[in-house]
Image 1 (tube, rainbow, N blue to C red):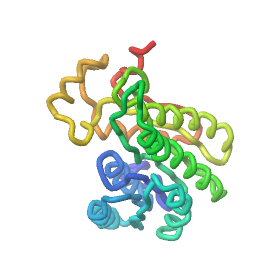
Image 2 (cartoon, rainbow, N blue to C red):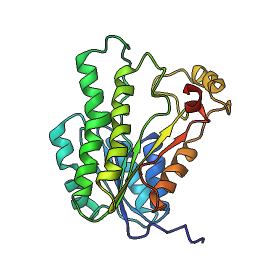
Image 3 (cartoon, helix red, strand yellow):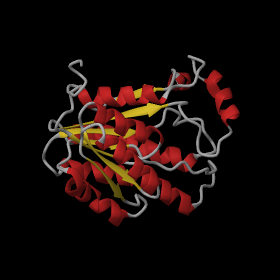
Image 4 (cartoon, rainbow, N blue to C red):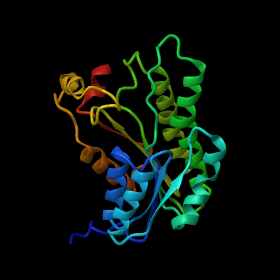
Length: 246
């Protein structure tokens, strides 16, 4: 066993959207480092329950907590319910998001509101509520490395840009007790319903000419959580894609 194997022993984390995809891998990685984990979910009841069983098998406390991040009132109680379920929080990973197709020039008001609420307003509120626990700790927001150039998901990208801006503002406002950083993945997993062949063909659009791994995103997240002299940073995990916009 290395020094890092249980370096989060005694800490408690809340991972939004923690039951599936990158959220699931992040939850398992945190538990592997010794952290207790609250798995937030909305509709993925079965996935969350299965994951909680896997987490408790790693000798940590774990629980699933349901909340609709599209409902501000549900968001307003999530930190308190997570704390009640497992214990006072030290780590917040704002991973949950929606990826609705929306036209650049004419996003529907309903989809714009939905994307802003879930992708920006909810994590911003959760960050403030987390900070109000007055325990210190770490917040990691999940952004996107392709905030410019995608004309088919404008509401999504506008909401993620809002979260990026708040990451930097909150890093200053909540220092020194709370550190706020973000990970910006590129091509990691196909979007739900996306043709895998079509997704793989996008590998040529980044300088490294390949698809990234979920493990790459998790490693970046763990680095930001465990490196306590880093705040206000956006860590791109995108094969260099963001550099092509300069």
